[in-house]
Image 1 (cartoon, rainbow over the protein chains, first blue to last red):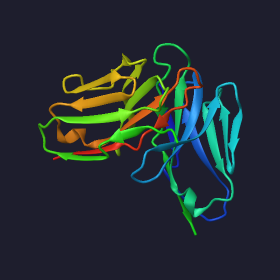
Image 2 (tube, rainbow over the protein chains, first blue to last red; image 1 turned 90 degrees about the vertical axis):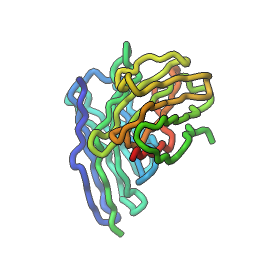
Image 3 (cartoon, rainbow over the protein chains, first blue to last red; image 1 turned 135 degrees about the vertical axis):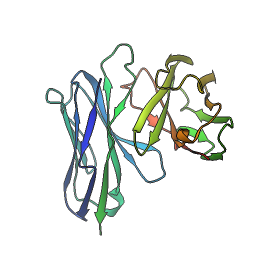
Image 4 (cartoon, rainbow over the protein chains, first blue to last red; image 1 turned 180 degrees about the vertical axis):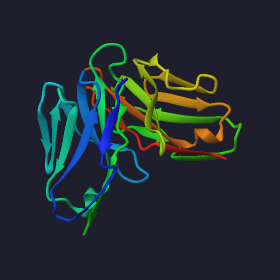
Length: 115
Length: 114
């Protein structure tokens, strides 16, 4: 059974700092990995999706990398801003076949960016 | 601006009452998911549909939960009878099988069972 772990559970950084959020998964047989952002009391917003054949994806100040063989992904946030404060979740989708649409989520990293 | 919508956004009910949550997936998306989020368990998949047919509902307590898609624009999740342990935020998400499977989430229904 796939397990997804995100460490740390919470992170507090001063504004302007670059930071890295970590995600690890136990089964490397994944189709893709998706990073989400969740604001308090809100739904999930998709940030980046990395296919298993890709090494990284970039969107603005965000860069996500994937090392499938080691079961790790990182989300890099450059020049952090108070508006980046949220909980960040990663989720993996298994390879095609029965259940291939299911995502397994980590429990998230709660990020606080201090002005 | 295509997005998943869910109603109601908040629901407070008493134990034993029936609860129905509704979801309108993004137009053209043929795969719909129901998730539940709690502080203890995080996000858990309850059930999902493809082309309105249930593919997997193994995450749902079968005796009290039921999920349906009466048509391509509406998915429902029903709890009968509700229990305090059902208190959680319930999310609906949709995707298209033709894409890479990126899932788009609705704003959720926050359910409190007293």
